[in-house]
Length: 159
Image 1: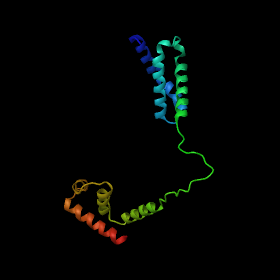
Image 2: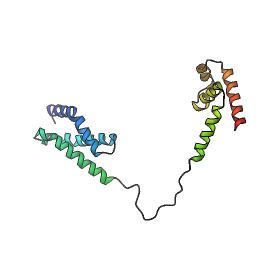
Image 3: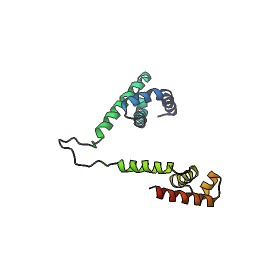
Image 4: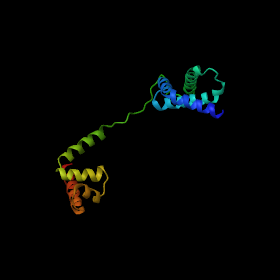
C-alpha cells in the first residue's frame, strides 16, 4: 500500500471510528470486546483497502467484517458449562460466618473511644506504620503505641 492510500485509510478510521465502534458495541458483550472486534475488522479492511473500489461501500465492508469476525469468535468459544439432566453435588460456600464476624468487629470498634478507634483502623486496616500514624494524628510514636495497645486490650475484653 502506498503512502497516499495509507493516509486515506488513516483518515477514514479517524473519521468513522466512533460510528463503527457503536456498531461493534451492538455485536459484542462488552466495550473491550467491541474494541477488539473493531480492531480486527479494521485490520482486515486495511489488508483489502486497495481492492475496495467504491469508497462509499467501506462502512458496509467493515460492518460485514465485524459480523463475520464475531461469528467466528463465537464458534471458537468453548462451553464452560455443559447442560446435563443431573445437577452436580457441590456445596455452596457459606459466607455468613465472615459477615457475622465483620458485624461483631464493627460493633466492637464502635465501642472504642474515637482516638483508639482511629489508631486501630490506621494500624490494621490501612497497614500504616506507627510513625505514619503519629504524623497523621499529630502525636508522638509512643502515644500511638500505647493507644493501640490499650485499644487492643479493650477489644479483647469486649470479645
